[in-house]
Each structure stands twice: as structure tokens, then as C-alpha cells.
Amino acid sequence: RRFDFTSLPEDIDAVLDQPVAELFIDIFLSFPRARVILTTRPVDDWVASRTSRHRLNNGTLAPMQQPCGFTLPVALPIVGRAGIGRLFELNNDLVRCAVPKERFFEIDVFTKPTNLLMRQLADFLGLLEWRPWHG
Image (cartoon, rainbow, N blue to C red):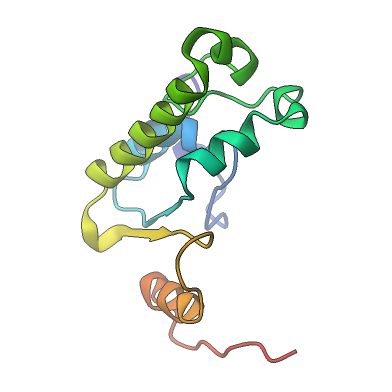
């Protein structure tokens, strides 16, 4: 908790990807009125993806708050795939519990329909003008 997230430049509208999920609590406490978008997927698929040989070699952090260097290669022999999956579920549950419903949006593009997703996301973010892209 050494980094002051409120020192981020004002023109930054979003933060994402690793290690945002693992630092959620610090970011949320720094910006308690922020809108939060939680991207999820079936836990077994997530574990399979994150524990693939490529991922295990790149320092991917364990899915928990403040993992402090507790990477998947370190965690896997200790807690196994089921434990990694449970950490992922618990971390997502923490986000769902902490963020007020009016500032929370969950996306699962792996198992849920996406045909209205961009419209729903635009509404959630308060974007007045939204036009679908037609390529």
C-alpha cells in the first residue's frame, strides 16, 4: 500500500488488467465512488487459461488481494487447481460485495449473450451518444 492511486493523472478514465484485480481493494478505497466493471468467466476455464505453460512462465499473480509476489507457479503446488479456482471465485465475490450495485457492472463474454452488451455498457458508463459500429 505504498502507491498513492489518487496520484494518477486526472485524464486517466480507467485502469485494467493485471494487477488491477489483485489491487482492487486499494484502488476501490482510493476511488470509492468509481464505477467498477468486473469481467468474469467460468472458473474452470479461467484456471486452465491461467495455469497454461505460457501463463505460468510470465509471473501471473495468484487471484487474491495483495498477493505480494505469490504467483501462480508458487501457489499451484500449495493449493492446487481447485484452490486457485476458489481464490478466483472469492476475489470476484469480494468485488461484488464491496461495490454498491448502482456502480457495479459484471461482464461474462464467455457464457452470456453479448448482442446488447455495448449498449448496456454505454448506459452504465453514462455515455449519452452511443452508435454501434458497422464494419
